[in-house]
Image (cartoon, rainbow, N blue to C red):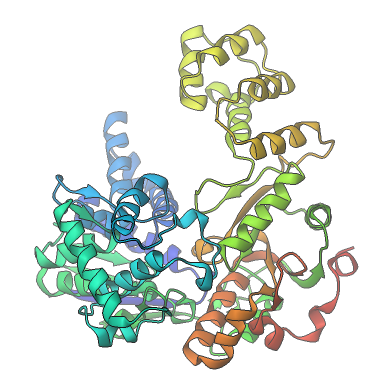
Length: 549
């Protein structure tokens, strides 16, 4: 008999903590990592969650008799955490050529080959503006196909007409193109992302585990839920743990829904208070999305702040961040955009100032990468010692480290070896001359600006991404632009479902900070977001420079 648990909680209430505790409890009851599968929503979140579970399971890992056994146990714990698509991928026949998405040039080739053959425009997703009106017909058709598959719908004119993607061609024509695309896939042995799940259902795939833990369940599609429900019914499972928050459901466009949380559970755990931030932030989060009853736990020590400010030029953005971080002793910052286009603009603004930052989605960007910071950090702690000296290492050890840190770049190795005692300025000069990371001209310009700047940014971890990419993450300070496309505002005013989802998106963004939240005018063009315009109280009109002294 399967014992069913649900864990529902607001942002920062300890849902991930609960997952770690469940995992540790199962290990203490005699299960092993091979008996458990933990499903996360994205690869990046799965990676973060696996590291946290390893820390929670350290007692079990270190109870092994040898170091090799400890390493094997740690690897086993990490491999038990993945996305549903990654797990289902193991069921896909190896002879298939994988065509996951149009995000990267190599994966876009099959799409372009097909659409070129029927004279329909298709654009690599990295070139998208983020505005539906600017998306070519081919991209829209792929979005419709994905929507139909993820919602578990058959290919019909009626279902196409219900898809929230507007087209300038008749629905019957779209149906014909999708039928041709499916035949093209079959002929060329191609599978898309949603096909991993669909094939798992068709093949009655069931993982050989006794326990499944599903995180971020509110963002699962009908297709994904069908596979999970099949496992629950036919998998002879001992335990099932479903984790989520209805108020953080922000993938309705996939389309996702929260119905996994409506199953019959033997035990229901409700976490209503956030331990991440103070009442000032939770008050604004409730204001943005009124259905949420999020409150801050009394144990939260930081007072927190929420402000609204404006920037006109890139230097204003960097000055604002520097001012807040210096005054409030902040170590991590997130800049969150509603659209990819907004993210690209913030990346360009930071790059022009030579400020190191990280793109949260892992996509190629204009930004200054983390390689130099990684290299200098590793060199400062060679062999675990807090020293910049590398003289004690043999040439072989040093070359091994360089191979791992910067790859096979022969022209770089000798200059670093000749350096003797590590010097950061000389390292920067070597890297700038040889460009081992194949940075674009914009990235090199950012790097040069960074090296020539008198300001030090190495004390800050700055991440830039969409609000969607921030799910499961947090930072000391979160900055959210208030700009919004006028076209989307018109949709917001007419479509109640879209309105509620947009409110939830900004609710998710507003619940990422541990200490401070800044709504920023001027950085993104367009009208003020209707979510923020209607729900942000007047007390937020104060500038950061006045509130943070």
